Image (cartoon, rainbow, N blue to C red; front, side, top):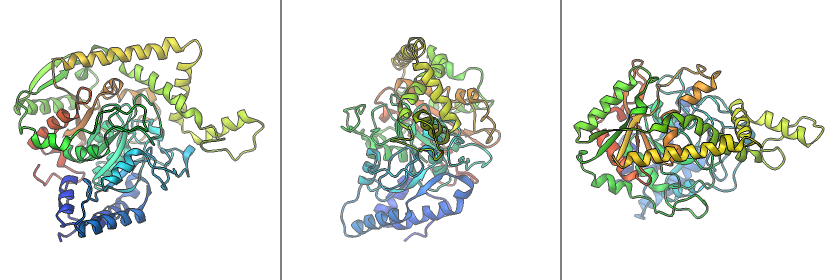
Length: 500
């Protein structure tokens, strides 16, 4: 048996191989993750709840089946962290909000049941911006998450704990959710891979709703192949979700195995609008170097235009907040959510006090924005118009994909900023989503992967965007880039030491 844990943790793919070959047990791996969390998370704040006893029990059962020669699932006993927006039976699910503090779901989300059916081991629940509303990891009701590369900086949001935990080697895989960039942006800030599937590719059943026409569960991992492994385990039609696509889960691992080592014949679109004024110095140069690497691998770079990109932020923050206003109306302190302990005179005061105590500042701000957009006399002027612009944005992408196979852009206009730096300026915070929300509005699959570092040594991410149901080509392009580079193997505090 190989000594465990090693000084540098392998990828999930290599860990899976060691588990399948009997070189490593799931119990040893799970315990190593729990030990790593105990040693590092007081500084990072990535976890809200651990399920150590049940995780070790599941790991032991998987090891026992393997020892008897029985088949095990494709995740083979790999530990996985789960964002706290995703329901887990018998384990607290708060959505990062005091409104749901103490809530223990009586059922698990479809993605959790599929993860466990594939013999993944749920370690616990990961910190996040409250109800998925935030771009920094600072809006959690239970304290901020910090970036493993520099704990004075944000990890991005809202899947802050998911990205931080994988980057800090607390777990090899994690589930996040992405509404307007909440998997991709923290993946970029933390130097890991984040994949948002096509809308409807992964079930939303059991996921606490923020904006129902945008929310998608997606994997966070160290490499594209690791992310593909987890996505393949959770994807596919679910009759419990009315927005679930009827298509079966894509065979991404076979697509990667069959992919050519180069990118000859692949057309990579480069949208002019994503390289405009406002990019942090160094990000454009770094991403263009990554584009040159794709070209070296044989890809053809094609200049394309997405002219309605400049309207994406306004469109997103009208649609998302309107849907949030509707979805969060259920938390009234009567049937759902926190109920004030103060004496109240009537039902209106009960509602007001319960919501004031339970919701954080960012959630209140978005509820107010959304309620205004849906209010009488403003619905046509704001919400309906935003839906029409959303259609124009989707048509821009359709036109672009007539000229190319994938699009490549920066994931974020900036790298990780310092904690507290943008908290008092919500508009500036919203603008940080400028490169991720357009594809979310169009429901397209996207992936962020590391492609370099800035002058402070912080990770920079490149975003790849594919057409609807285009995950196989998307992961093949990302995997080809990773085979030619080593940014995805670099970890906080050390240089990459493994071969790609």
